[in-house]
Image (tube, rainbow, N blue to C red; front, side):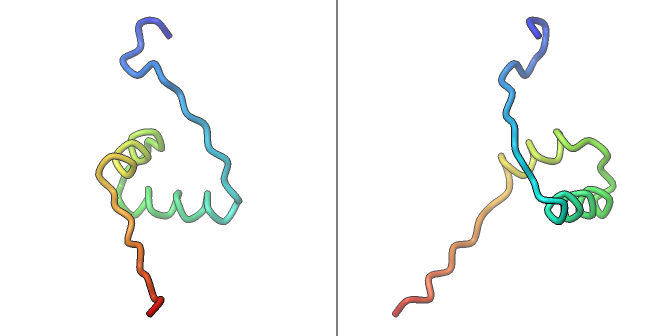
Length: 54
């Protein structure tokens, strides 16, 4: 790994349903590389936090 550009590795665990959702989104975008998709979403994606309390 000394010659790799990205030397920090992260690991996640998914349910089968979560994996299928991610595979579906990859196919929808025409992407084949899971790592590229995850990096893109982690860096450029966003989270909407809705507060319904009054």
